[in-house]
Length: 309
View 1: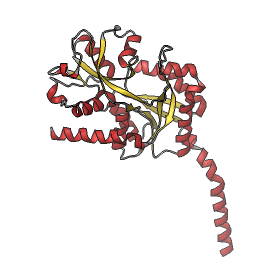
View 2 (view 1 turned 60 degrees about the vertical axis):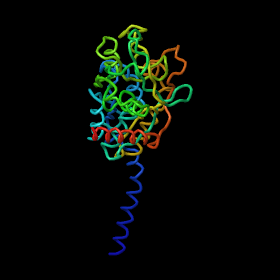
View 3 (view 1 turned 180 degrees about the vertical axis):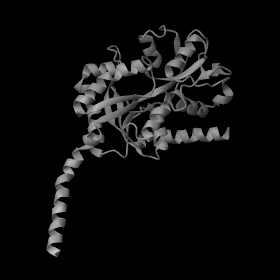
């Protein structure tokens, strides 16, 4: 009887060993559709149009359906990830920090974008109307400064944090500090006079939110001027959940990483490439959590300030 049991155990162990590689490669059986979230930096139709080449590339490379998940707010994408409704998301640095906190650390950063010069960051800026006479932060005393969204890195957390570090307490120094809802809405509000200034982002002086709005004909060139710039912010990461198969995570990360070279035309469309751009985004590099810990620390500081107020 002992021999029979031993033969049964050995056979079971052997079957498990044989099945193990198949299980490791079989994530597509459980995930025939991969859901990828995007933050609301532009209107929904523009976002869907711009992400179409990436979606097509991933579907062809991975052999699964890919669904683009869009939410009306940063929090919508974060909560969808926390609720296991989406598997991946392209997040800003602050939104990644929010997702890390909301999921008790159950998210992992994978890739971030890299520019031609090797840089992996961008800048928060404050903009005003060029004809307003407002050319510095000091000029904004008692004026209305619009932040973009509470979970926006460049549109709220970084400018707020750095303004305080430079001696300006936004809630006291400015007349009002409303949220516009999005970067484009903030810039539009400056142009039409709703806000005296707005916080947004740019990679450099020729590529950013207001520059793209000029290219799209949403605002006239020369109406918006930058009056303040933050230190460099590490670009936000493609983020995944910790509870996904490692093979799936690596396959998707590798597919996204290969997108710029696999489909150069699609990549150029996706990144709004301008041939005149001196320092375009050219691809992705791997990142880890340590690159974003300071953002989590900054958010904790901001929460503490809110509690005090």
